Amino acid sequence: MITAFLLRSLDRRISVAVALLLAVAILVPVLNLATGPTHPLHIPTYIMALFGKYLTYALLALALDLVWGFCGILSLGHGAFFALGGYAMGMYLMRQIGSRGVYGDPVLPDFMVFLNWKELPWFWYGFDQFWFAALMVLAVPGLLAFVFGWFAFRSRVNGVYLSIITQAMTYALLLAFFRNDMGFGGNNGMTDFKDILGFNIQADGTRASLFAATAIFLALSLTIASAIVRSKFGKVLVGVRDAESRTRFLGYRVEHFKLFTFVVSAMMAGIAGALYVPQVGIINPGEFAPANSIEVVIWTAVGGRGTLIGPIIGAILVNGGKTIFTGLFPEFWLFALGGLFVAVTLFLPRGVVGTVSHYFAKRKVVNKPAPPAAREDGIEPKIQAAE
Image (cartoon, rainbow, N blue to C red; front, side, top):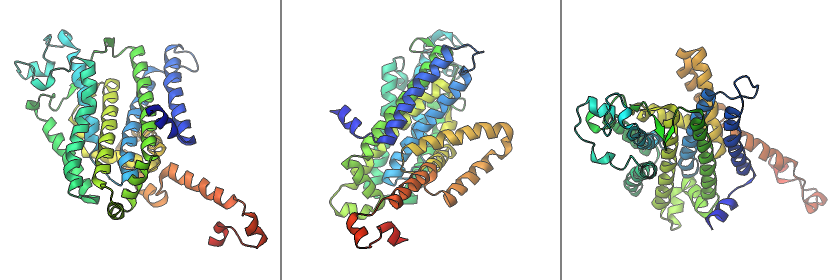
């Protein structure tokens, strides 16, 4: 039943995007593992890891687009959900180090030994098991989003006020996780990971598997997001976005629709953070920085808000440009990013994908032949009359 629901949600564009992601999940690891360094089609491990990071950013942008593009909630706090998912995975990876750490303690992570912790805090229990860590990757961001959304949406906080509150939440978590007595590594965070599921995290095979898992989860999340927005539930979401008061007047409990979508989006962001940490090799409070959440908004706007595919493309394009531009002109990158956002706002308000889709839709209407009755009576098609 669930499978049929998901398959019905796949239009041609989403189907092509999902197929492409699944192909990438297979092809890139094969070209990395099955070809030698001298082979013309060989993909180096560092390139694969870099694109794996881009795909986690794409998943984060997709999560934001679900609430911003289709529900009208401009969240400036999705970086917090991303970071919480990353910390949940980082705690698991730290527990896997065991006695191989610098201080050789079989239970306590190195930073706890350095800070003279005598025993493992209670909230670290269970993170030696992958299933528990995976559950926390979903539960912690989802619970925070539920509690935050419950109070915010019931109080009918909207617009810029909601955006400011989400950013304040992210900044509060930033300050909290910077504290050494929180038990999350303080300013330095967590790093020096060794294994994941018993496999060396630095091995080429492991990194290829992480890349494939990221592409597959992105394809699955895209399918789920498409199923949500193309359902009757999604039609109500668009109504909430475009005319919340009218939707409420029709009898819908608007806060329930917002809350569900916000929680699902937060869980997607948590998965993105969990996939990001083992590929990058570190997680620290800097991931909570409000600027990171603002960047996600830029990725979504550049690609095309409300298109699902657009934020994925926007995240990859902007971060790819960031990698190239920071290597050539590192001191000018922030100016380039700000200029890009201003240019998109002025000249491409629908984003790259939204503008292209609108152009082809308009051409399709223009080229559509008039009905026979209209031609006989000399009545022009609607689009020509409008022009």
